Image (cartoon, rainbow, N blue to C red; front, side, top):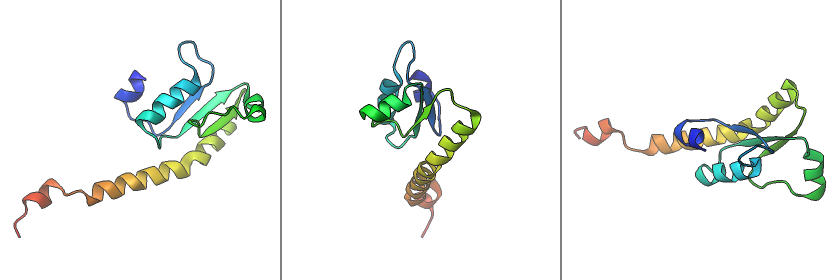
Length: 107
């Protein structure tokens, strides 16, 4: 989480089973900070998660392991609309804010 907080990422790709924190816990922490950040999770248990309905609400997409490069490419393309929506929202917010120049311009 330290790296996430101190850097800018467009999306997060994580494994479900990790030594210090689970992918589900990581996804939940990320969504607390940035709810619109896309999270893709790799797991060897994708079928089991789907069958049992235990899919994390904080994960946008699950990719089965072993994942091929093509699988990751497709997953990233699937979350791209979410990235584009987020970027357009950020652009709309920043364009509606007064700039330093407009605040000090004479009328």
